[in-house]
Image (tube, rainbow, N blue to C red; front, side):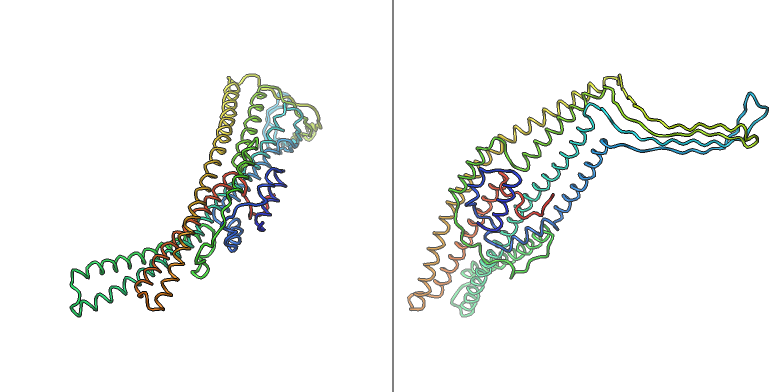
Length: 452
């Protein structure tokens, strides 16, 4: 088992306790990063510097803030105010007006005591939303890793395609040069050389298009990963031969289908959303019930007259007690909120049930796609081997003088075509495997830094 897959195994066993996965992971199918070890480093860096993951990190930071706010309702609040004014009073027991200074302040501590579980539910909602942010981060990374694999294989295929059309262009230009020489000697007519000229022009255009697409693919890869544009030397010349994993895929699929609840990031998000809506529903049902708080504090009300200090008035109080807040009637707003919350809860449950049925069906379809891709890969490899044998035979025949250079060139062109086809089959197989194991959540975060 590769290092990356051992990491997957530890993550799943520790975080999920999924013993049934252990058997299927003992012979996990090959991913693109197992074929190209350098891709592993790209996946690790992408988790930290890809623009998409940077945005996801900000979402998690916002969820941290929301969680703190949600838990704040469990703790006491301390507040107060201070007011100092200068007034003119007209008193019934004194003639004229009196100038006075008035000072009033209040400091109070309020601790929620009994709110029918609302404050605890809100705190729990904050925790769950934070977990949802983590699961969204995992899902975003899974999708990003899949796209990076695809983009990296596109780089390899682009390089192979460029080499193929460059060779074809060189052959076409060589044929055109020979034809122009024959035309100048009067051996060939303008009508005969027309098709050769068109073929050469098309070969030039194909080479330029391949080069343009290859450069664009490299820039897109850099944008996706948040890294530098790779050089041609850094890109492999071929996708190496890979072994198909039919029995391993079947074992993984069987283990996944036996699970009572899908253990993917998307499924965990949906289950968490059901929990949130359940807590919201409970909170709405207690809106019209009395709420009890513990209150403690001190206050002062002081007034002094500048003309007569003997008329000074002041009261300083220290208090502690229980406070009851009770919204008795709110115009049926609570009734509407309960209905809305119940509907959202049922909607979340329906989404989860639909996802559970869909993901199992998709898993079967993706496993079938892996099987078909593996069969196509086997055929393509056989054709490539045969073309390689024929190319070697033609070259040896040319050395013995039994085959022309044109025949060698044609054999090489055929080999290049089948080499491209075989690499395309390897590409397709690797992506089908990535689709499958990613969809069922087996390799959600193999290279992602810890999010604890």
